[in-house]
Length: 250
Image (cartoon, rainbow, N blue to C red; front, side, top):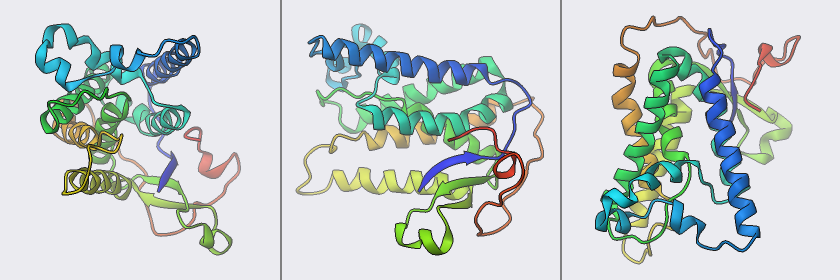
């Protein structure tokens, strides 16, 4: 299922989340320009390579952070930024701007460490913000498990009968993400499988688990808010001013 938006407004302006999205987009444009100019080793130089980190951890440590802002293509970038746009502003709103920066970066670090723990001798560069965003999604799950999330109907044949869009509680979206990555990750390690298939599934898992573990600490002392709850398996209602007054997530 592809999540498209939520309906939970923020109490403060989530400028850190917007800056993270802008940084990812700008870094990707810089990547693209260098590749088009003939720079072929960008991923190896700025991506996180487990083998290189094990050999020279101090030298390779900065790539844990640079890899978080790199992406393998427009689809990779777009899907990650859509998820960050949907979930990140509310998590930032719940914990505060400074804490959110630390939470996001720790999620990315946990993702890199988890992937390295599973495949410590891999020389394939790991790139993408998926691990950090998985932590953000997990944080949203803990804070707002029943918040309604609008998704694209995953079955095209049902579009004519049930509509293009449907609503699910946040815990369903998060559980699907985690279980799909868990299944794919362990399947990729089975007999006859070769490597990770180009996707760092265990990085996603590590980031997600770190979010579950850290969210309580990062929201300590903050007021828990009452939110709208998912109220049933139905298409989202359309109201004046857009679907339920939604202001973001497309």
